[in-house]
Length: 423
Image (cartoon, rainbow, N blue to C red; front, side, top):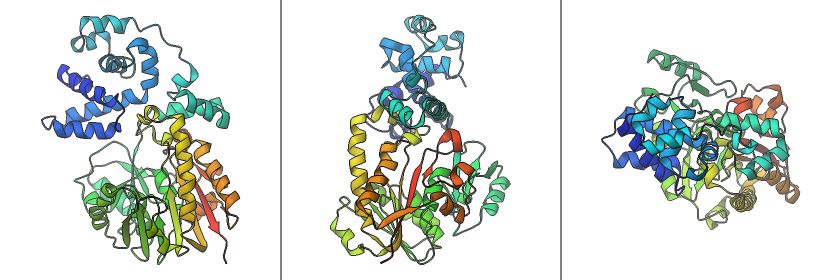
């Protein structure tokens, strides 16, 4: 869809804010729309779609732009031309003469370096190539340049997936079961769900299929005492509570009071009362001591680079750095150590990230196991199959879970399931 001159000017204003990389792009857009309530739904949709499409190819667009790599107007013009295929004539009403001449001068730059073609920072490209090989990283990078699908998780405490699919079809929404998760639904098109009856009564939640699989890896059961150590917005907490059929107890820990404050309406909508949100200062908060060795299962969805979610959060590649990665891996190790103290003998500890980088995944788990001989690996593939997941052969026998968008159609999640030896 071709933007009007007024819509294009709005895109430029938003893009200038986003390119400061002071806040996540989705937050910048949300606040911008709140400040500009006169923008209609179609305006907001077109602005957001164009900004995110530009961010997914931002490193390549900046390479093409050369000296104008921070010029929001010219980056957007390049994006509309190269990514959406708008002609120079179509773009003419949106641009000044100098911008039109500049755009015409960019036509010869078509052979970027491999990292730029994959739209990954050099440091991430180099690390991933060393771990996976260049072909894998090229395919991974191309997949990250595409919009992510819209996945839903069915609240199994309220209804079955088949009933949810029928209810969606009855309201004209085309959807299919997710290929891997037994509780997931993938929508054929992006739709607004806030006013749909299934969403309003908590029967479905928006959640990527990969995130669902990480939650299922915990294997929560009725009557368990479970800890969600980095609960965040609560998506996996709700999954655990539903798996437990609102029995037992889920402790949802997080350092953010604001995130935990969002739990109450979500819990009410989901129809669960077995979740206890608790704010902690850090992984060594004294409040955790009372639960030492008392939980059946603990999930650590650790803070990470987020490079597995670049389809949804493409600005992360410009807001993360190699130096930040070193800080993250140190934090990940500390959090996993602290969470392990809560697991009772015979219990389960699941460590996960939304990153493909080995430093945040296998290296963390290997270091933990070397320091904690009372824990051992429980193969992820077998555990997920026992939860009803349908896995390809590459995952079915996997020791640890590693998902990627080009191989599995999910965000790039990692998961390791660890068992504590019985006393």
